[in-house]
Image (cartoon, rainbow, N blue to C red; front, side):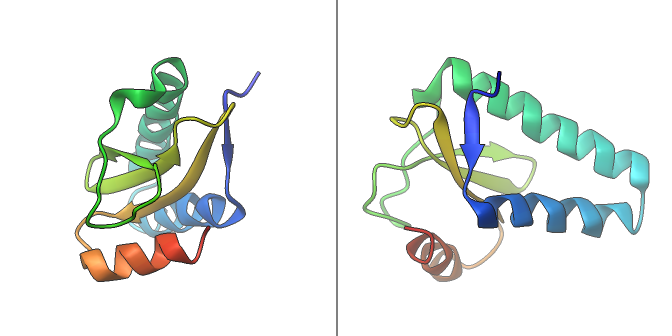
Length: 103
């Protein structure tokens, strides 16, 4: 049973990350995707382990870092709600705009 659900655009985020890495190294793309799902399983078990980013959103979202990516999620939803998976090296203004668009 899945203990998390995705915003439709968060699925697209993962697809884009996978496809980008896959262009260069398909085994690496598989490993990165496995890391994401391992992290999501961990968040399902302990949803408040992530940290808040009030500079990105006033919503009660939490964030977990996997490699250079931020997983933005709603820990109080059951199952937890994955809002976005974004490159954490992006401008905080861009990340905040993405999150606003996914309310």
